[in-house]
Structures are given as structure tokens and as C-alpha cells.
Image 1 (tube, helix red, strand yellow):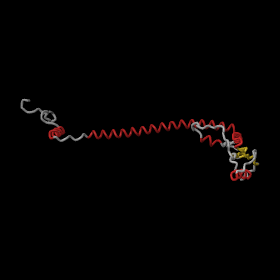
Image 2 (cartoon, rainbow, N blue to C red):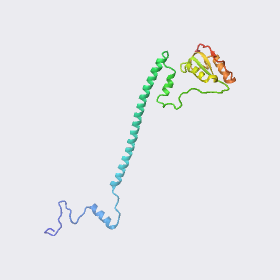
Image 3 (cartoon, rainbow, N blue to C red):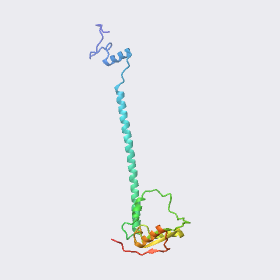
Length: 205
């Protein structure tokens, strides 16, 4: 105790022994009266910050996934382009008289496709009551005539090839002879003789 018998007060006028800050006094009164203390505001703010952080992390993860998918797609497109260019060069060598071969569409559709689980194989057809009728033009730019001949050989007695001696893909409308012969087969099951052909006619238009 000082000589004058009073409490010593600091330079700001606060009695170090008997006076408490207002906030501390309020907390002490609540504790003495049994009133529960109110939750601190910083905790709710922290929850908000955490929720915002989680949202941003989720958005970042989505953006990273989108970026990775775009990167993989770009790599596939580069591979497809190289494969496509190689096919074009091969087609150009084998079809020098055609600027855009008929196989071009098929090549572009199949780019990047997985290997077929049912690859081409020799046909095995037996016991047909009515042989299959094949129709193909000699100068077909999309399905070569040699392929039609190969199918006829594989079918044997179960297939007959009707030849159009002109050009074009899809020979049904190539001439009246082709239409009549095919119609007779479809309607009356009238099978043309082996080696049957229709002469080429000048295109209309």
C-alpha cells in the first residue's frame, strides 16, 4: 500500500487492484448469475470462410478435370489428324484420277475408333432356297467391282452377280435394264443367269 493509504492508479487512470474492463465485468457477472455466455462471433465467421474455401476447392477440382479432358482430347485429335493424313496419301496414290475418293467418308468416320471385335471374315452361307443377288458397276468408285466378285466367289451357288458395265455407285437406277432385272428378282424371285450384265448408258442431266 502507498503511504497515503489509497490504491495506486496507473497513468491511464485504471485501478490495477480493484477495477476491471467492462467486458471482463460483464463476463464475470454472467458467470456469477448462471447465464450462459453468448457464442463468440469469430466462430461463425470461421465457418463461413471454411464453406467458401470448400466451394473454391470444388470449383478448382472441376476446372482441373476439364483442363485434363481438353488436353487428352487435343492429343487424340492430333493422332487422328496424322492417321487421317496418312489415309489421304494412300488413297491419293491408289486413286490418282479422283480428287475425293468415295472411301474418304468411311475413313473420316472410323478415325479413332477401337479395333473391331468382329473383323472381316470369309462368308459361310449354305442352303439358301433363293440365291443372293449382287449388283455392282464395273467402275464403282466406292465399292470396287473386285470386291463384288470376291463376295460372289465366297457365296458360291448361294450368290449371283449382276454387272453394270458403266460407272457410279449404286447401280439400281443406272439403267432400265438394271432396274427391271432387280425388280424381277425382288418381286418374282426371278434369278438372272450367272454372268448377266447390263450395258452402260449415258448419264442423264
